[in-house]
Image (tube, rainbow, N blue to C red):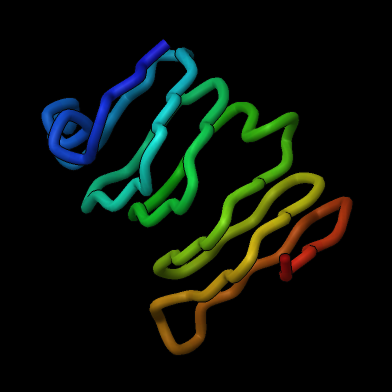
Length: 106
C-alpha cells in the first residue's frame, strides 16, 4: 500500500512523469493534484483526482468514485463513474463508461 500524507510526499514518488504503484493500493486522504501519470495501481482512493493519466486495475471495483474529476483528454471506466463533477480540460475531451452509467451530483 502506498499512503503519502500530502501532495508533496506524493510528488516524491514521481519518476520520469509517472507514479508506478507496482500493483499496490494508492490511498490519499487529500486531493490528488499532480503533473504525472498514475500507473499500475490496484485501487485508488482519494477525494478529488487531478492527474495526467490514470491506469488502474480497479478503482473501487472497476468504478471511478470521486468528489470531483478533472482530466485532460479522456476519462472512462468499465462500469460506473460517480462524482460531484467531471470536466475535461481540453475543448473536445470525452468521458464515458463501457458497461454502466455516469452519475454526477451529490
